[in-house]
Length: 119
Length: 116
Image (cartoon, rainbow over all chains, first blue to last red; front, side):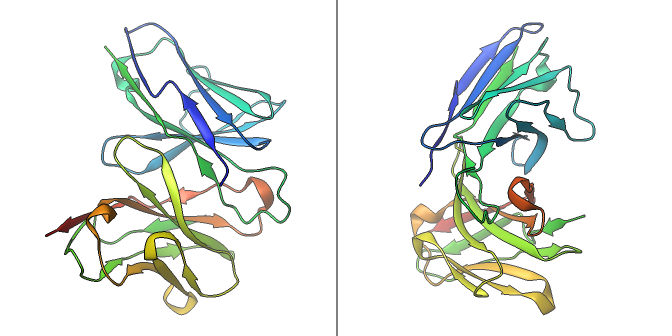
């Protein structure tokens, strides 16, 4: 199946610093990627939809200046958590759909997730 | 708007017993439905999906689910549980008519525990 890779898997940073998380589709092109946030023992909450070559679409309640998303190529989207605070600590997961497949049925391929801990 | 309800945040079964994880959906448009599995500190892996073809869907690892429109349900089953099935399971729904960029809405998840 298609592979989506996230980096880093784990990151610990100090409060006030910025952290960048990368999401790559390794064997397919993805015009659209999605970023989710997952709190411990809870479900995935969609943060934003990342569109290649255009601005991301953020879900209600998600601060776009806090969570910067860049989708500069068909295989890479990045999420930057700016001026991170302890409450930003979470598990961040990206997903992507193979743009080359005709008749998409809505299946997404997920990355392994990135655990952010802000001290 | 679409939503998914997973009844039971925690299910425990004995090894070899039937697994039944419940999922009910709400959607004003024809849905696509999915079951994903998540192991600790990992992303999600697709188990199976319903995309308006056969209502009984077979997935990986011996799992299957049946789409019942009259009951707005998409319950996940496996005849015989294995220790390796212990994980978090998520049911999700998307809008079948929304095209290639449709978003997934997830349920709150069910943690499956398998005991000896």
